[in-house]
Image (cartoon, rainbow, N blue to C red; front, side, top):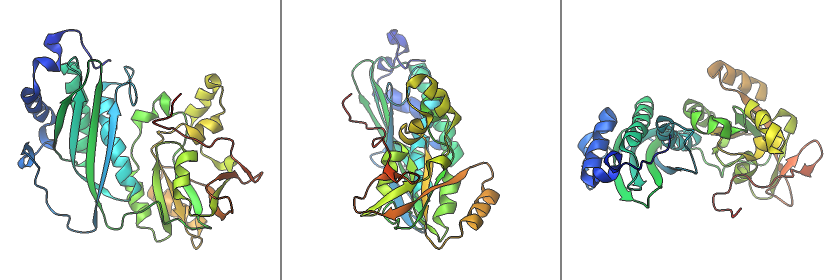
Length: 325
């Protein structure tokens, strides 16, 4: 379903900004608190973080980029929230209040937008997120974007920069082929990220949004490379399906596609991998966790190496937002 309409009577231009904001507040219902803790003032008044540290992230969805007419308005709205929650999960945190900026052309269909906000509302209710404010701005006809800024808190935020040479590399779930549905049907690894962040052997973690070959480089310390056991890489069935028509291997899709929204985790050398994996299976029986390699010393640094052949992977780029085709 496309977000746009040729019938002016069904478009947001018929409402105007003030009426649209009032409508949005009604659509959001219980996840939109009353002023001063929600919509109604120049800023929302928030309670201070009682323990740990405050964390903050922002992500967006744009029609034609993050979703299209094959994705329902509800799923597009949910994706906006879940993209942000996945970032919170990567830090081992819990989500807090959020603000949303809506940028839309005058031809955006009001009924489509109501369903979009219903998806946001359901997802916010699930993750106990309050949407406390935001902004509405206009774009040219045929354009729609929404930007969510999400707060959170973490007792001890897990960083990317704290991985060490010799660490084991793990990944949750399966990778590749997300364009066939996972890019909006995923579930952020929130509980898993919190559990990992509290484990003393977890040295670093992040979520996979732009593809393993791009994102994993962000975890590598200076003068190291990632030696990967490609035979253990958890390739999604969708990657094999996509490989039948794409001209690329399922392995390449698993390494490069992006929007997996899984966690990549490093564990220090002191960990008993077998015991750790047993604890994981008991805690998260429905979420796969697979060891895929180790961080090794390297003079070149920053590369991903096939450990079986000791050669660099043939793919060096994942998804790049600003790459010119």
